[in-house]
Length: 117
Image 1 (tube, helix red, strand yellow):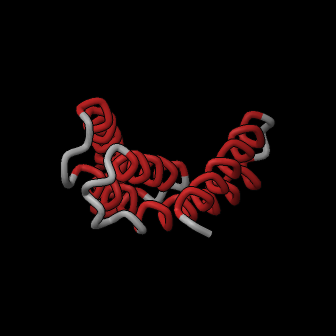
Image 2: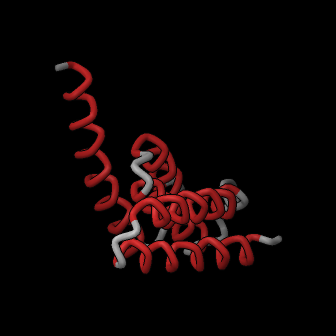
Image 3: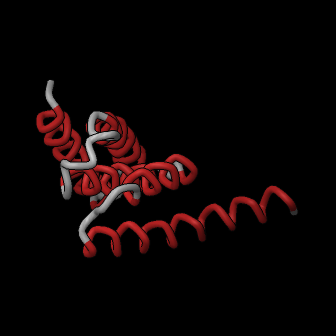
């Protein structure tokens, strides 16, 4: 599969996960979110050094980071968001990446506090 096909498959799984979560089936939703995350991460990593491919590159990293957060993989989400901010993403995407980064940092802070306590 190419990057576009991988991304489309990931987004299809994410949509199914959203429906399952809305229906209260959290276990199945989490499984599909995890599968969607792995696909979206794979698609994003195909463009890791392709800085001329904006906004696609930063959008894929934003999406992968968001899915990682849905899976409670906050450290992984943090790394993906950082990759998305490298280069020159469009201002709107840069703002979204930074907002997502703030949200992820809150979760990481809570986790760190729980480990210390």
